[in-house]
Image 1 (cartoon, helix red, strand yellow):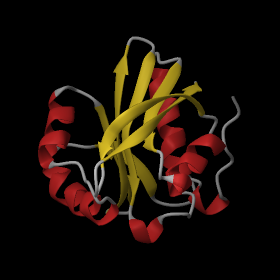
Image 2: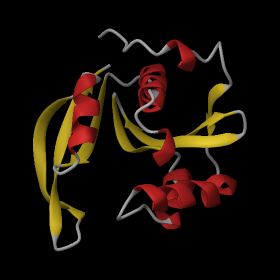
Image 3: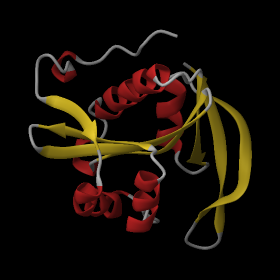
Image 4: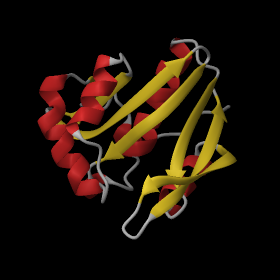
Length: 161
Protein backbone atom coordinates (compact mmCIF):
# COMPACT_ATOMS: atom_id res chain seq x y z
CA UNK A 1 0.00 0.00 0.00
CA UNK A 2 1.36 3.44 -0.86
CA UNK A 3 2.02 5.88 1.94
CA UNK A 4 -0.07 9.02 2.07
CA UNK A 5 2.12 11.94 0.97
CA UNK A 6 2.80 14.34 3.80
CA UNK A 7 2.59 18.11 3.48
CA UNK A 8 6.09 19.55 3.10
CA UNK A 9 5.70 21.54 6.32
CA UNK A 10 5.31 18.26 8.22
CA UNK A 11 8.41 16.58 6.83
CA UNK A 12 10.27 15.62 10.04
CA UNK A 13 13.59 16.49 8.41
CA UNK A 14 12.43 20.08 7.98
CA UNK A 15 11.03 20.72 11.44
CA UNK A 16 11.06 19.50 14.99
CA UNK A 17 8.10 17.13 14.72
CA UNK A 18 8.93 13.86 16.41
CA UNK A 19 7.61 10.80 18.17
CA UNK A 20 8.73 9.47 21.56
CA UNK A 21 7.63 6.69 23.89
CA UNK A 22 4.96 7.66 26.42
CA UNK A 23 5.52 6.95 30.12
CA UNK A 24 3.54 7.54 33.30
CA UNK A 25 5.20 10.95 33.82
CA UNK A 26 3.47 12.15 30.62
CA UNK A 27 -0.05 11.30 31.77
CA UNK A 28 -1.06 14.66 33.25
CA UNK A 29 -0.52 16.36 29.87
CA UNK A 30 -2.06 13.46 27.94
CA UNK A 31 -5.14 13.38 30.19
CA UNK A 32 -5.61 17.15 29.92
CA UNK A 33 -5.64 16.83 26.12
CA UNK A 34 -7.83 13.71 26.21
CA UNK A 35 -10.47 15.59 28.23
CA UNK A 36 -10.43 18.49 25.76
CA UNK A 37 -11.03 16.14 22.81
CA UNK A 38 -13.58 13.57 23.98
CA UNK A 39 -16.95 13.53 25.72
CA UNK A 40 -15.98 10.13 27.15
CA UNK A 41 -12.19 10.33 27.60
CA UNK A 42 -9.87 7.54 28.62
CA UNK A 43 -9.02 7.59 32.31
CA UNK A 44 -5.61 7.63 33.94
CA UNK A 45 -6.27 3.96 34.69
CA UNK A 46 -6.80 3.19 31.00
CA UNK A 47 -3.46 4.74 30.12
CA UNK A 48 -1.65 3.17 33.09
CA UNK A 49 -3.05 -0.26 32.19
CA UNK A 50 -1.89 0.19 28.59
CA UNK A 51 1.61 1.15 29.72
CA UNK A 52 1.75 -1.73 32.23
CA UNK A 53 0.65 -4.19 29.53
CA UNK A 54 3.50 -3.00 27.31
CA UNK A 55 1.29 -1.55 24.60
CA UNK A 56 3.08 0.65 22.12
CA UNK A 57 2.28 4.13 23.52
CA UNK A 58 3.60 7.24 21.82
CA UNK A 59 3.69 11.02 22.06
CA UNK A 60 3.97 13.36 19.10
CA UNK A 61 5.75 16.59 19.90
CA UNK A 62 6.93 19.66 18.08
CA UNK A 63 9.82 21.08 20.02
CA UNK A 64 8.64 20.32 23.55
CA UNK A 65 4.93 20.86 22.86
CA UNK A 66 2.61 17.86 23.00
CA UNK A 67 0.56 17.73 19.79
CA UNK A 68 -0.87 14.22 19.97
CA UNK A 69 -0.51 10.68 21.19
CA UNK A 70 -1.40 7.12 20.29
CA UNK A 71 -1.73 3.71 21.91
CA UNK A 72 -1.41 0.53 19.87
CA UNK A 73 -1.57 -3.10 20.93
CA UNK A 74 0.13 -5.86 18.95
CA UNK A 75 -0.79 -9.54 19.10
CA UNK A 76 1.03 -11.93 16.76
CA UNK A 77 0.78 -10.37 13.29
CA UNK A 78 -2.00 -7.91 14.16
CA UNK A 79 -1.85 -4.36 15.48
CA UNK A 80 -4.89 -2.83 17.14
CA UNK A 81 -5.01 0.96 17.24
CA UNK A 82 -6.67 1.76 20.57
CA UNK A 83 -6.30 5.54 20.65
CA UNK A 84 -4.94 8.19 18.31
CA UNK A 85 -5.54 11.80 19.23
CA UNK A 86 -4.42 15.24 18.06
CA UNK A 87 -4.77 18.50 20.02
CA UNK A 88 -8.06 20.13 18.97
CA UNK A 89 -6.40 23.37 17.82
CA UNK A 90 -4.01 21.42 15.57
CA UNK A 91 -6.49 19.01 13.95
CA UNK A 92 -6.98 18.97 10.17
CA UNK A 93 -3.39 20.07 9.52
CA UNK A 94 -1.90 16.70 8.54
CA UNK A 95 -0.60 15.80 12.00
CA UNK A 96 -2.92 12.81 12.37
CA UNK A 97 -1.75 11.49 9.00
CA UNK A 98 1.88 11.94 10.03
CA UNK A 99 1.34 10.10 13.33
CA UNK A 100 -0.68 7.30 11.69
CA UNK A 101 2.10 6.75 9.13
CA UNK A 102 4.62 6.41 11.98
CA UNK A 103 2.31 3.85 13.62
CA UNK A 104 2.11 1.87 10.37
CA UNK A 105 5.92 1.81 10.26
CA UNK A 106 6.21 0.79 13.92
CA UNK A 107 3.60 -1.96 13.55
CA UNK A 108 5.31 -3.36 10.44
CA UNK A 109 8.64 -3.25 12.27
CA UNK A 110 7.08 -5.32 15.08
CA UNK A 111 5.87 -7.92 12.58
CA UNK A 112 2.25 -6.83 12.13
CA UNK A 113 0.63 -7.52 8.77
CA UNK A 114 -2.73 -5.86 9.53
CA UNK A 115 -4.06 -3.06 11.70
CA UNK A 116 -7.52 -2.94 13.26
CA UNK A 117 -9.47 -0.23 15.05
CA UNK A 118 -12.94 0.73 16.20
CA UNK A 119 -14.52 4.08 15.44
CA UNK A 120 -17.84 5.52 16.57
CA UNK A 121 -20.56 5.29 13.96
CA UNK A 122 -21.27 9.01 14.58
CA UNK A 123 -17.63 10.02 14.03
CA UNK A 124 -17.94 10.90 10.35
CA UNK A 125 -14.66 12.82 10.13
CA UNK A 126 -12.81 9.99 11.89
CA UNK A 127 -14.30 7.39 9.55
CA UNK A 128 -13.34 9.48 6.51
CA UNK A 129 -9.81 9.92 7.89
CA UNK A 130 -9.33 6.17 8.27
CA UNK A 131 -10.85 5.38 4.86
CA UNK A 132 -8.43 7.88 3.24
CA UNK A 133 -5.60 5.92 4.85
CA UNK A 134 -6.62 2.57 3.42
CA UNK A 135 -8.87 1.14 6.12
CA UNK A 136 -12.03 -0.75 5.16
CA UNK A 137 -15.01 -1.60 7.32
CA UNK A 138 -15.15 -5.30 8.20
CA UNK A 139 -17.78 -5.36 10.95
CA UNK A 140 -19.68 -3.66 13.73
CA UNK A 141 -19.74 -3.88 17.53
CA UNK A 142 -23.21 -2.99 18.84
CA UNK A 143 -23.37 -0.77 21.93
CA UNK A 144 -19.58 -0.61 22.16
CA UNK A 145 -19.08 3.01 23.23
CA UNK A 146 -20.70 5.02 26.02
CA UNK A 147 -22.92 7.81 24.71
CA UNK A 148 -24.91 10.64 26.25
CA UNK A 149 -28.28 8.89 26.15
CA UNK A 150 -27.31 5.21 25.89
CA UNK A 151 -24.59 3.32 24.02
CA UNK A 152 -23.22 3.74 20.50
CA UNK A 153 -22.15 1.19 17.92
CA UNK A 154 -18.56 0.93 16.78
CA UNK A 155 -17.51 0.21 13.21
CA UNK A 156 -14.58 -2.20 12.99
CA UNK A 157 -12.00 -1.23 10.38
CA UNK A 158 -8.99 -3.10 9.02
CA UNK A 159 -6.00 -2.16 6.91
CA UNK A 160 -3.28 -4.31 5.44
CA UNK A 161 0.20 -3.10 6.33
